[in-house]
Length: 565
Image (tube, rainbow, N blue to C red; front, side, top):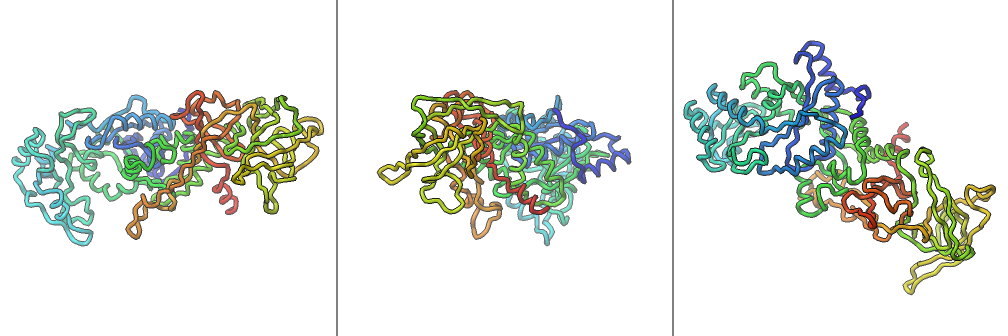
């Protein structure tokens, strides 16, 4: 892992840690953790948390644990555990031997709960979930105490033991913390800390039929692992008093400290794991790693690099207030990352045949073409030129507007790396559609030869020779949603009402250079004028190339920043 700790931008969390180090809190240690729930694939918001937690540990030469909060077996799967580990590693971070599970601590968590009951800090409640909700009260009205709140301690201990033994049905009883039903913080109104759930756990099997709630298991797991700074997203701010209460109720002194930061929200997408799951299960997308998804696996398959995501997370910073980040910044980061790295090649996405009538039949010549002028180390390749070539359909108009510098009847353009050609004739099919152009070329205008570039024309087109092309499928992606903030439910609509029906365009007859015939899955290229592309890692195979467009060349973020300056 080559992450320079000195390049990590300062933030308010580091300010807190710096003060803790000055006062000797936590004995001068800094120990963080990343605690995902294995109930879905991670998204770019989790990437921010990963970068923050691991990056903070790196900054202060401390460890960072990977801990799975696997306390809800009904929604968890080993598939998600594996994908999360892959995502963290791909981003460039290493937990070394510090991979843990909340289920590792189930026995300790149970014993802590027993002690809380003995201390009169918890009780068994038999209200239904709906009754508990109704007893909770509102922001302006205090809650109502459960009729079971003052059970004798010995009775609570017996019932909790029998809950563990499986004597009661799911939902029949819960263990609740005894705090304050009149607290202005609803999270402190006797929250449930254990529930009965008969579901096979992916690690413990059927050993347990009671499972701890997140707000109970999280602070205790942090303490068991000797975490010093428990960094959470802002929605847990109102849960911090409960975090501290649980530690105190369990007689833990100088425990971990919870700190909240603003979660990442991107426009034209959703970040709720529940909503992302709906997109997958209801077939709005192909899978969790669909390149339109904001999941880390989707972004990886789309073609984003770990460096570009880390750069993005660094640029947006760490704030105390929620906001929405422009997706154009994310796209700017991948362009900057690939600009000098990606080989630049020619691809014709919607081919239009061109016959160069005065070019000798049967002749093919090879032209020299560099891969990237900003990175000479990438070298060059030979591209064939022949009588029959292909250009983009959009590069020809029969009746063009003013200042149209591409090809039209009687116009001249330069073919990149090659010659100047002139359109002489337009061939149409029975429907009146243009299917072929007849052109001539000027043999004295060969690029890179003495005098070849002397004659100037305003338009330069990319092209491919019929003598050296590879047919491929190209996938062009747009925003998954047409609304900038699809999470806003208005007029009875939901986020699914704003799904973009044109978020994917499939081009099945696209052509790429023959140099890409053996391109490996995951290879990235810049296609002239079209943007950056990656060879799809799932559907591409030898003899059947599939390219995903990562991002177009247009950089709206860079233009906006330039205008602001």
